[in-house]
Length: 331
Image (cartoon, rainbow, N blue to C red; front, side, top):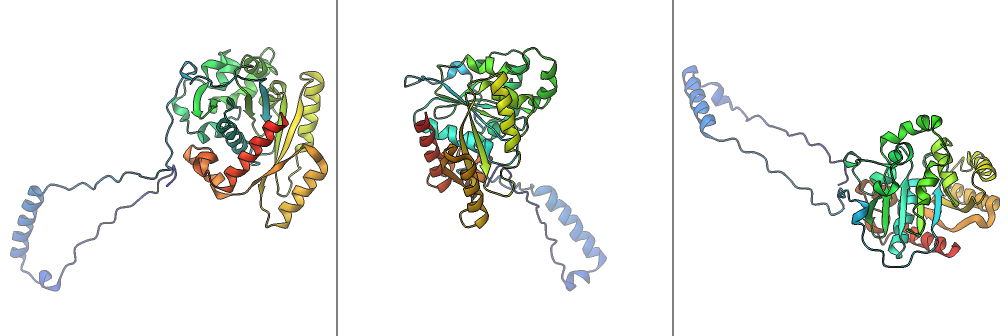
């Protein structure tokens, strides 16, 4: 069972009435009725037993810890790489990639921070964090000058920390307009964490608003997921134009780290054709690893787990492990 339990409707059946009972005289009915009332008063109502959900994969709400409770780091941190996972088109696997790539790198012994910059908060809920329990989130970092370490939830998975997002972030686009240094607020916050993590991933919203601009200014590199479906390249041109403007004016070091093909179904001609078109267009910038379309990848977030925990032997987990190795190899 997932986080949505099926609703059950109790069915009560009426006792069958025989022809003989119908023909009983009224006096006997009254006596039987009085006896029935006495029995009802004497017989206590039996409650149905509560059935516990014993599904091993049922979502476990993680306790909210503070940065001070973070487990000690077991290796020397190298140069921190800040990577935004970005595509203005929705439904291409940004949050899925952010969660599972970060978790795969954590399994490899890396220290990883995932910043959820999407008002939908899919990366937050996908890691088993109950948003109603949060006292602060990335919104407070951007708008209320909260120190980012106070918003970090440490060790949501092995080697993986999280800066969560809540619905409060939905108003940030409008509120940032009148703020000083509105484009660089995330860079100032995340920049203070250099040297504390090997990788900082930013899960971006599906838009080109101020939140996405903040991610472009804060990031060193970009990973652009592109689904192998019709209209795959739609919107990527505008994203690349926005990237060039940010690079020329606000972040000269910004580069594309890699293009990631997602939701690939090798059985269809369309997926194969789109994959070939993307490789022809972007060349060596495309990762060799391709993320397949699998049911398990879609199920894992509903249980608050990365795919490497939910289905470690599946092809989805294998793909993200290979992607993590490729990310490390690219430096």
